[in-house]
Length: 130
Image (cartoon, rainbow, N blue to C red):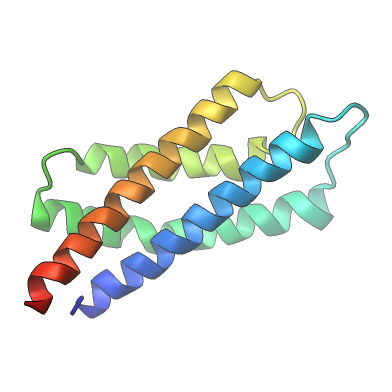
């Protein structure tokens, strides 16, 4: 079984993955359409607030997990970069001037780290379960 911290981390991780996917879908299917205007108070701010709150809860747990378990391919600096990238996802996903290539790379980068963490948490659960 996962510890309370790791269970919380998994919950925040899953939520951030969903928010990242939601932002990517919105960016590709809505924002990139001609004539789109961002609705700051109706859409952008509420979404950005959800990402900010979740990522601020996620970051210390993710850093502690990485420092404690020392995974081969995931480093504390990647947690910091992902935290920063989530801020980019939260805001820039709603603005048509945001470059497509760079934004897609940001979505991929965030998903990569979150998926790696999920995998590590699943492995941790398996080893503590036996």
